[in-house]
Image 1 (spheres, helix red, strand yellow):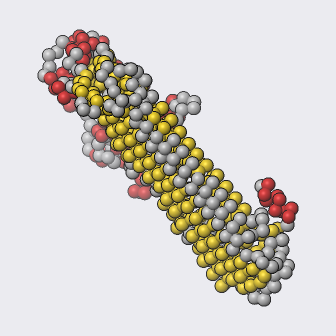
Image 2 (cartoon, one colour; image 1 turned 30 degrees about the vertical axis):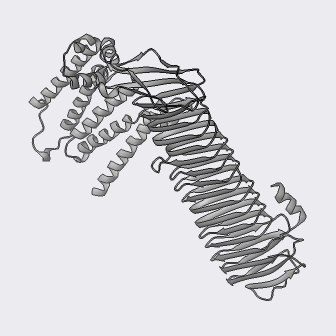
Image 3 (cartoon, rainbow, N blue to C red; image 1 turned 60 degrees about the vertical axis):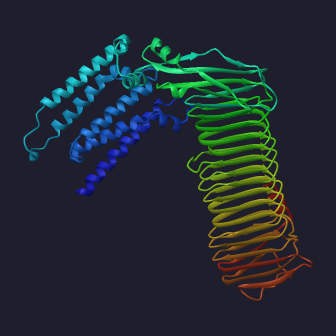
Length: 575
């Protein structure tokens, strides 16, 4: 019986979740990101959870009261209404949709009444003093909220203490923007640094002017524009000269209200800039003397900067492009970096689970981004990429080192050496001009068109190599090794496999010295008629003169040495 009830509850929960997902897909516009709409319509799932609890009470009396389920539905309805009416504040949303709350309360009470069982005693009363009081409270507060929302003067006329007055404005007020007159400073000189310190607002810096020009835009939430203006008049820029240049900030500490401050700054291109900002975005372009920034809980967008850039980030995304100098980024949540003429060193936050996209970097690259997916393209110098529990995808690089445990790796068109350290993953490589080295555990490797030597050490993973040119050394276990070469081998080949098959496919014209042994399997030469096999599980023979050494070892399964004709070789090359 208990199992049957659990199955019914599980089926109900699954059905409602699918219904919620269906609602999201119906309302999502064509071409929109489903993940974004799941975030936008998350109250649907809150409503579904409340319905599950109410139905669980009606069917099985689990939970013993529908109160929590009703509250979940009410909160979900209010948040969903707010999502579809972003222009309304909290009081306006409640004043417009309070009738829905009354319907939810009535529906839950009807469920409670009609799902009553005789074994539970006398039926519940439909009307009780508490229920009547709840209905009256919803009606009175809803009507009051509707009247006040339509007549702002009613609430703005109230004289409240400072804290309650600020709370009223932040919850039910509207946002107003006020722009101050620019502050000019013509005392500029090469080498000076302008330092900007801001919080709860953005900083935008543009290079190219002849003087320092700072403009403050204040965002104040108030019940009326007049009250918001009174607060805005108390907020101002604070500009002070220093031995290095100028400091620009606001008098936020003197104003005990809730507001935002956006600073727009124009500076001569030859002036260096230092920015500290939190809970806002930082945008900079056209600077020619370098940039230093410390940004928290926001976003940094940089473009067209000459000189070194140093970013210290916390819970912050960064986009940087066209940087003529070195770029150092620490603590990024996500990063998109492109067209940098210097070196790039980036460390991502371990808790971000984001994406690091690095493209067209002239200097050396070092990326340490745990739990982040790394995408790289056009790395012209030595690069080191590190992540875990994610993935790495690289196209067009020089000498490359990838350290990525529990991460799939894909690398293509590498003009130098490639070294990969990984585990519990699948590795795919193609068009590698230099030496390929793989150190893995429970990792499968698939590589083709490798011009340099190959060294692969892994366990519990398949190894497939196609079109290799030089020495090959492979070691794995419990999976198969397949080596296929379209050209005659010129380097030594050594394969050690524990409990796995080995298959080697070579052109029929190849020359080599073969030493193959399977402890509990057999050796199968196919197409090499000159190979003399005297033992079922061992084959030592020479095919042609002056060829490389091929040494194959496995403990179980068989070893296959297969010859392909010139026509098959051409077909494989085209394939």
